[in-house]
Amino acid sequence: EQIEKGGYDHFMLKEIYEQPHAITDTFRGRLLVNEGIIRMAGIDDHIEKFQNANRIIVVACGTSWHAGLVGEYLFEDLARIPVEVEYASEFRYRNPIITEKDVVIAISQSGETADTLAAIKLAKEKGAFVFGVCNVVGSSIARETHAGAYTHAGPEIGVASTKAFTTQITLLSLIALKLGKANGNLSHGQYHAYLNEMELIPRKVEVLLSMNELVQHVASIYKDVPNCLYLGRGYNFPVALEGALKLKEISYIHAEGYPAAEMKHGPIALIDENMPVIVIATSKGHYEKVVSNIQEIKSRKGKIIAIVTEGDTQVKEIADHVIEIPETDELFTPLLTTIPLQLLSYHIAVMLGKNVDQPRNLAKSVTVE
Ligand code: G6P
Image 1 (tube, rainbow, N blue to C red):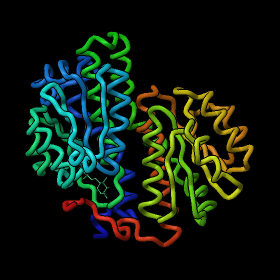
Image 2 (image 1 turned 90 degrees about the vertical axis):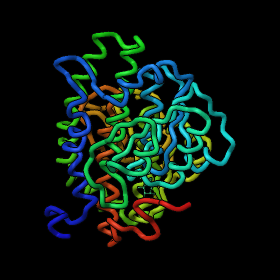
Image 3 (image 1 turned 30 degrees about the vertical axis):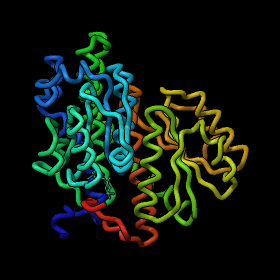
């Protein structure tokens, strides 16, 4: 097992560090920057299904559901296709309205999650076209879907999902960009600029990984807190949910993810000097709004750990700690902002002596209801 961990203390840390490589593997052979095209057989062969779709319904569970939420922002923003994101367990039991004009995208790392598999079968019965986004090749979901694309993240052993999440988002970005171009929603120039930027993401993830010691230091300050709040808006709202999930899963600290603006409808009541709030406040995407949310936290003495874009000055003045991400387009920020949140959870769990790779009560893949 030590050999399999490749010199890392845990599989989770190894998998966090594999992300630059894993993301590259996801777009290898697909993102053809010089030719200005995205080539994906699973989409190319069925492009009219997507183009004629009334809507896309994403079904998934856990971390994959969070990736699906990022997908909602991507598809609506870039391709102007309406999207609904559903927990597979709710979708399958609530007599959902599904038609032949719907495209269902099932997202699953393992390809074996029972609820997601059942949701696919239901959607197929109702005549929808079902597309799978899986990591495990030949898995049940990969076989049950009409078409699909693999994330090619490589085996993920740690129960808390890391590289599966970022590669799912990478793949969904590729699909959204491809459809945005095909639908005529993206200008030639914008499309090419996005392709160029996407190729730079793995290098930018490396920059964030090099900030490990800073994140470790922040973890050492907050490791004993009982609660933690994560806030984000837009593309980074799902990242806030995922950040909170990571902390819960492996450190057993109660954490909640919230859309930053919803804070005033509840969570703000919890804020005092003992409450750390992790806020994603990147320069693009409602920056000024997030700054005012941060001020509200500050005036209630909450501790602020902010994820900002490099060169930020405004948030730096108010936050207790800042972690800077390299500049990128708003749609790619989840791939960067997620990294320090993964590292934060990891270090807190290690410092608390928890079983990082196999947290209590959790399974890597939930194959029964
Ligand atoms: C379990 C795992 C999570 C995962 C979820 C969905 O709860 O512990 O990490 O996100 O299942 O799994 P899937 O394989 O369908 O992505």
